Image 1: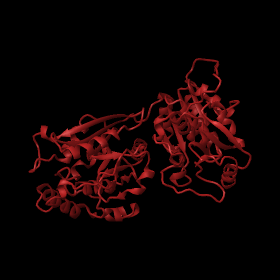
Image 2 (image 1 turned 90 degrees about the vertical axis):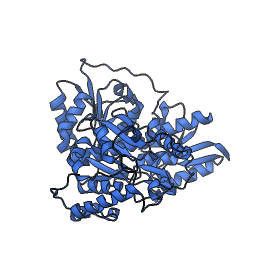
Image 3 (image 1 turned 45 degrees about the horizontal axis):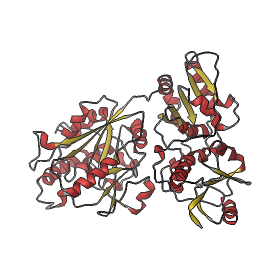
Image 4 (image 1 turned 135 degrees about the vertical axis):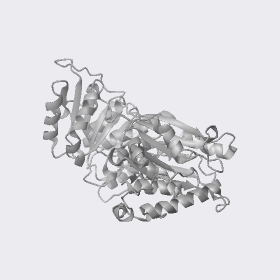
Length: 501
């Protein structure tokens, strides 16, 4: 076997193949060869626009993956087989990622995170587009096989009624094209694309600057939904479309996210930290390249040595840290507070925006690796399989509006000491916020709050405040044992008169 040369298997559909192509192009460039790709006959022409792929046509149903595997074993025995199939007849895959699109990427073995590589068609003929007027273009693609939109005609008519005078509203189902990648000519000059979860939605990765409003089916579990991409200015579930039509119209008109947000991120550190601590923090910082061209990320390191108000042992207060960034933000902007040595999984930005758009606040449980064992940043959440879930929380996100509404409910607790994260998580749950799953990780170490735990002054201050909070508002330290549907019975909704801390 020539271990350096690979043959990839992904029989179809077209959208799945489009998701895989950037990983294959990267494989060929890095190892200086043209990888083979096995694809079903009905979807094979999508590869005709790629010089970096050698097409191998499987003359059978795209669901017959086991038959395709036998075909490859017989005819391409010298190649390393990379099976990127995520569904088929009598076939299943372990679901380690949050979306089937991320699962395909995981199976490809690409060492670069998915959203950091664009889709290219270097053999596609250059197309020209002629229009009757100079109005900007809004593209609609509302037909699909895997995730059909039941009210597509009503939706299309609504868009045309409200935007037809200002824009050329083009329904791509009415446009004839020889190959699917011929659409790129229209994509490259369009003002915005509105697409259901279908092949054109994935094709938009070939034009990363094209603003996309993605309409995603929620008829099945979330794994069957395409993942967020950096050029998605809105991500609307089918069940939300009717209630969000006004926002969709505004986003389509402006070509920008609604509301237009920025993320203000704060952590805390001090000068003169130990070498090992600095290593962990530097690793975490390098992971925080939140991949988006629609939301600006503003990082702040709250160096508590520069501020007058400190706890007895010299640590900052959580409220001071959040107030520091809140003062710079608008009501719809997202605030994020996180421990300085926590790493982010690529794709976290999309998860944050999805959660905040619906719930205004969210928390994370982290995943721990043994000391000194994180050698490189993770590519996806699938790699957390070797990590251990931790019941504490090291990161929280919320709008400024949420913070204004809940600030006085949160006690004046010391950052980096016992219970501050537990109470913050309970405040979020009480306000019906959500958990963002499998998005942060961390190298396990003995925290300062764990050393002389009972004698630690910050621990003592926070413990008293935590017990008072539970008496006033309900909840428990082991809140993670409760299901979301049980939260309403756990927390007291009324705000007591003495809630101001």
